[in-house]
Length: 218
Image (tube, rainbow, N blue to C red; front, side, top):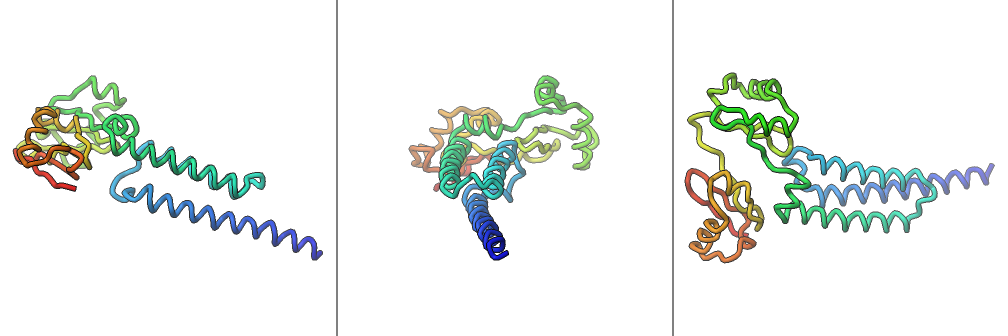
């Protein structure tokens, strides 16, 4: 009986230690790798990353064969890969295109872009329902509409001012933003030099709004 109680305490004591370690890892992940989660909806990449973390933690807690050393090595590798993934996603245009996506214009001057909608596998009824949810009932009221990377529909009504277009995001030139306003990267660099900025990496954010370029340095 005593031996049984001793084995019980050892086994569940080890599980308790594993639970504490798993909670600490989850808190570190949420604190340092997912800090902006409350500002945006989850992307497919977020779902995959969270799923992998859940699998690592559950395997460590429930599988007796997974040692603390194994768990530590796996978490370190996972952390390094996640750091690299975040750098690619938020530090390069290509990474953002691949792992997050870019807004897609589906209505321009009241006309549907059927080809874009076909590629995105959405139909006019879905768009109409999203428009009605924003109290818009006619295409004649729509200047531009685009699908954001998180799947939401952004609509600009006719006669309303265009929303600000991001041209530089934390040092990275946003090519899609330049296309929206009909400008080139050479034009953007001339604008930066006029303000005595030689490197886009020195810019935290630059946006085009109401016909003017607004710049905030790092």
